[in-house]
Image (cartoon, rainbow, N blue to C red; front, side, top):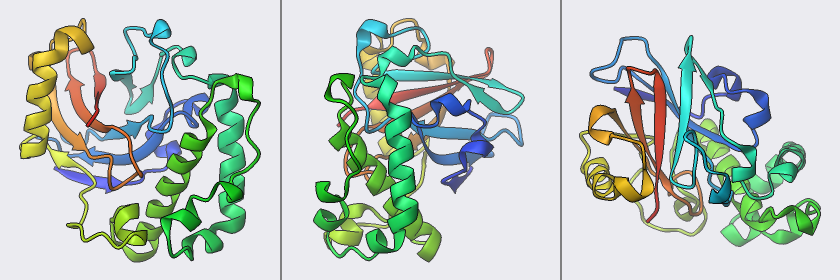
Length: 241
């Protein structure tokens, strides 16, 4: 199995209306037990909070399901699941434009406090939107920073390693299903699937692996990835730690 970091949104194929809701972490290839040539994108909704009153069979605070059609993803979740959903796309566009304009300044930061300073955050959406703009901002900024540093240096490191001087082992984009961290998280999901994954039978799904949150973001949940060959569905389960 191999993984390609930070695939472009266009390569993932998810409808543009969802680009601001998901971060494209990596794309996994040559998964044992799955067809050769099948590429599985790994996506994250870190930076957003959920309202499970709008959970569906396709998404909740615990999981996200994507349909794979001709190698491209479709998502049919209810946007109201994501708090502040009406403001997310506009705020993401502001953050993207700001990053493009000031990227050199942000990459020159010497501390996490400089990079994530609220003084450099674009104007907040209206308070009544329900979007936690500060959390979304920090998530976006940290993701763009580690992505840019990887593309510049080839080193996959966390914000803590880059800017806080933490001595960490080199990060992995994606851990295979044989890795102890995936096995431990999978066993926990099995024990709790009746409560957090109603309607799923995890043993019938093909385990793919785990995308840890810490190298990509300042915090947030990691992502367990499964594939449902019978229905051509990519199932991603949030692992909160």
